[in-house]
Image 1 (tube, rainbow, N blue to C red):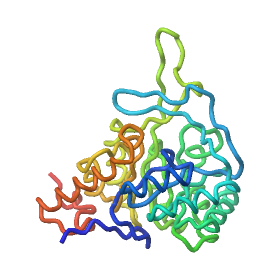
Image 2 (tube, helix red, strand yellow):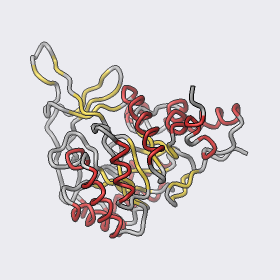
Image 3 (cartoon, rainbow, N blue to C red):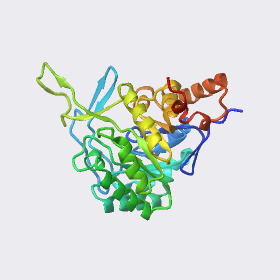
Amino acid sequence: MIDLSVDLCGLKLRNPTMLAAGVLGETGKSMATVARAGAGAIVTKSIGKKPRSGHLNPCVVELPFGLLNAMGLPNPGAEAFGREIAEAREGGAPVIASVFGSTEEEFAELCGLMAKYGADAVELNLSCPHAHGYGAEIGSDPDTVQAICRKAKKRLRIPVLAKLTPDTTSIADLALAAQRGGADGIVAINTLKGMRILPEARMPVLANRVGGLSGPAIRPVGVRCVYEIFEAVKVPVVGVGGVSNASDALEYIMAGASSVQVGTAVWSEGPEVFSKITGGLMKFMAENGFNSVKEMVGIAHSSRP
């Protein structure tokens, strides 16, 4: 009997796939739709203390190998988001609230609100590469990561996941700092800082000039980061970046991820991508003698060339 279910920091997922923050995660209706389409868990859009309009257009560029975006963390603000979480929970999958802030106290306050609204866990956005004063700008320092995680964890009884930036000299050090701060799990990675210039216009394409690269191009970076984090920490790891099929998911799982998040592939293929991934996982497991996802987590560490 093949079992796709996953226990992630006490959250019961029916399968190891999750909706990544930033795609179809702003309204309760869209999140519930994704859950009903087969996602094992839902991560909301990153929510801040106050409403935020984000960056000017153009803010998304489609590339042959992924997306480059500089949305600028647009969101309706924490006070308006409670009803969206309540509706998202009707989809039948755990709802993880992504939050961003500029200080320890701001993160902790937002975490408390999300728990009050019924979120099953929170994801600390310590890694957005294109919003001044937030994300990677504060999440690149291990001491700051540790302090934010500690403050958030003191405020909560639900799991705290720290989403880390790959734009650092050692993501393992950041993961260790999050673990010291009490984080229940690590999410890796967020988008990679990038830029595209249009030669005919002699200027960057994005209004913000710099954006975050996502999609297939960053998967090797994400897999490497998960591999390094798995060897450094004792808490579960969630892999993100370029997952669009079962093979992609298996790379992350065998590198050490207990589950994987899907973002750009939802944008390009729709919510149906979750059933495609889980169907492929079932087929692979049946053909290769695996009965549970847990049996495959980190297996690449004992199968080196």
